[in-house]
Each structure stands twice: as C-alpha cells, then as structure tokens.
Image (cartoon, rainbow, N blue to C red; front, side, top):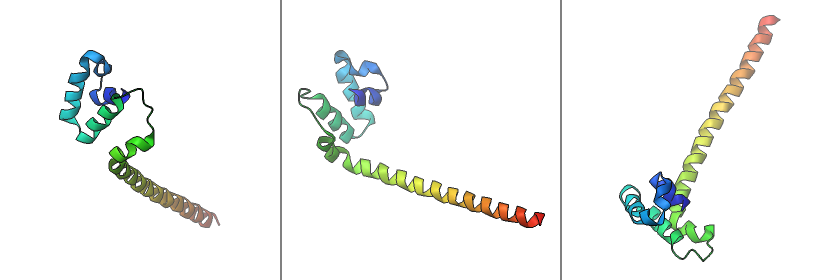
Length: 99
C-alpha cells in the first residue's frame, strides 16, 4: 500500500473505493513492472513475502540505480581527493613562503 500511495502521491489511493482509479493512474504514468509489483503485493495479503520474492520483478532497475549511485560516489570521491591535494599544496606553499 505504501508503494501505491507513493505512486499516486496521495493517501487516498490506498482506500478501497479508490483502488481502481489509483491502479489506472499507475498504469498511465509508470512502467508495467511497477504495476505488476503493486498488484503482486496487494493480492493474497495473508502470504508473507520477502525481498527474494520481488527482486526478479525489480532486479534490472535496481541494479541500474545501484550502478548510477556508485558512479556518482566515484565522482564525489575524485573531487574530494583533488580538494585534499589542493590543501596539501597550499600548506606546502605557505610553509615555503614563511621560510
């Protein structure tokens, strides 16, 4: 229900009387993978589900996002290393300037 509420950007989407309209909104605006995931999670709510059950449905998208996050992290680390090196050079120049 949380995924459906986030997709609809409203808590009204998870109310039983609005469920059909909410699913139509998801169908129009999002991928079929998300729609299938929501339907899977909403049907047969008595059965416990784990991450292992839903990973085949979202796996490719999950790894794409993970790869993008790791690439961004590499860029940030590279920028940080440049700033650290700049700080070392500044301290060295300051020491040479005072001697």
